[in-house]
Image (tube, rainbow, N blue to C red; front, side, top):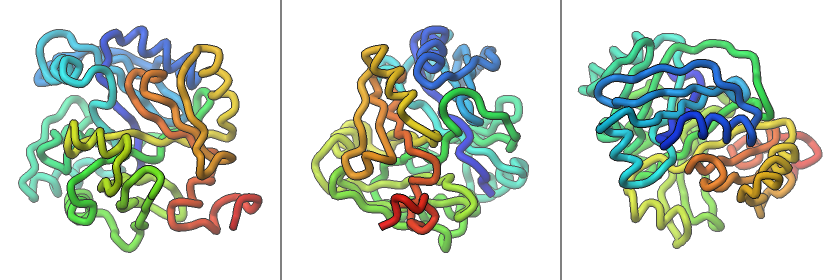
Length: 283
């Protein structure tokens, strides 16, 4: 029932400054802005990069966004998905006892209604690409038990476990599940991770518990993004295990959000379908 990883929502202190950062790093463009009333009490600036949107929420007063900033600082507040039938998704969630709130065409689920993933769902729309990336394809949800979370999301969102792929990383210290929505057509998925080794992800989990950790986007070439980061003094790292295919933008360089950037279709190498990766990198 989910088509795409459509957007990421960030809590930020200054929406205009955050929009400028996204423009300078990813070539994003502001597409709209407005106010969100209760319960979030925030001003929203929306920028588009690739065919995805990034919502930058600046608190307009006391509420969940201001509380997030006070506790954790700037960073990921929610992950957003699109569906061709939001009405059916809403009915399914309500049938399973989930509490929903709405704002316009968007449905909101709080973290206690999932495995720590504040979730936004809205209708699928086609957008022309903007800037240096193609678009989002993954959000990462750190959980207590990745199989239990996979079962939960299968039930809540009508996913098909036969499409899922296991994932494991000794270097980053986790095991988990890629809940691929529509392989081999698309890479879109929630990466559900359970930490297994000491490291940055384990420290994040110990601090925040079940929560959203990062996102991943695709690009035809990550060199222009790297060059923009270097010009700004922004921190990044080239992936040690896939240096030709992937890099990571440090949260300090992108409004508190850790973002992975992979070259087009290279992510199939670690997504259970290595034969779909470009031939020059096949093992």
